Image (cartoon, rainbow, N blue to C red; front, top):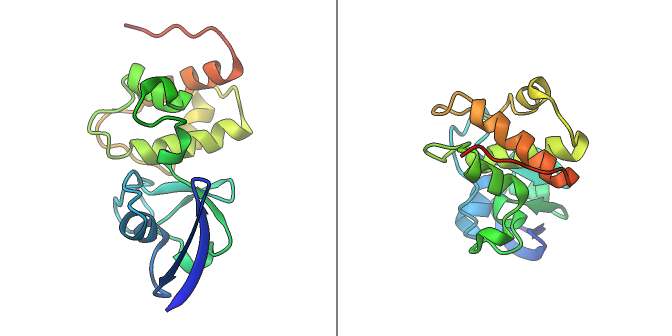
Length: 166
């Protein structure tokens, strides 16, 4: 067993873990951060995407011991008040209002990948959004509303007037 110290969503955690424990399982099974989904366990789908020291990573490809001393942000950490829509992150609101989800399984990973994209490019065009999310798979939506949601959130984050289609 190895002791790890990882700051998750702003809170310091310290646990004894097996050296082979994946970060996604540390988040879900040890800390109860179930917003981070396990999709494929092969790094193909991106459902487990989180931010590790400010960059999006697929947490099924990172061991918890590799994250020792790091900061991890999950989809739960984006919202100021997760139980109140007014406290949601602009990406969370936009995925809801623009119907960027159907089953919702890929949504946490999509949102985390999109947050990383928008931190680098606050005004992406459709091609740039699709390229930025290409490591995340959705089997339900066809991506049109996901792209629209990312662009809507980007506009809100820039302070632009946002009109949502009804």
